[in-house]
Length: 156
Image (cartoon, rainbow, N blue to C red; front, top):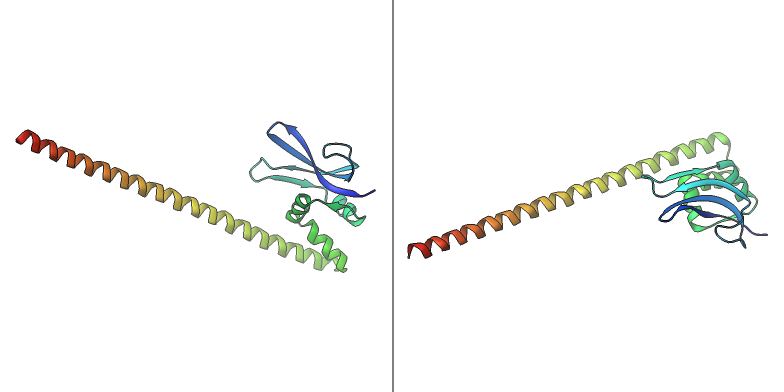
């Protein structure tokens, strides 16, 4: 029996919530599973991810293969890094230090990404404002030209 760590879709139509489950690879996506090890909600901002770390490490330790998406989610939580460090035989103190270092780097990346996104929004809104000003200037100059033309017609 090959065990996979995968997502099980739940929730209403167009409002998915996923359970992270350990299941037999032959069972259907939303079918029978062995154990639920977490919950993933992609619709919240930021997305919600709750995983029982000890159970995920257990299933990975006994040979369960995560799907690409679940592997990505485990990476986000640092569970893959913890597993790799424990495989190398790193002591608990060193492991904690590495995980703290990883968390700081990840947080810095997220902050820089969000600041870049915010800066990009500011640039776009500034461009929209500039475009509006240009359109207003064009409309005003067009109105002035029309006004001057009508004055010439009435004077003649």
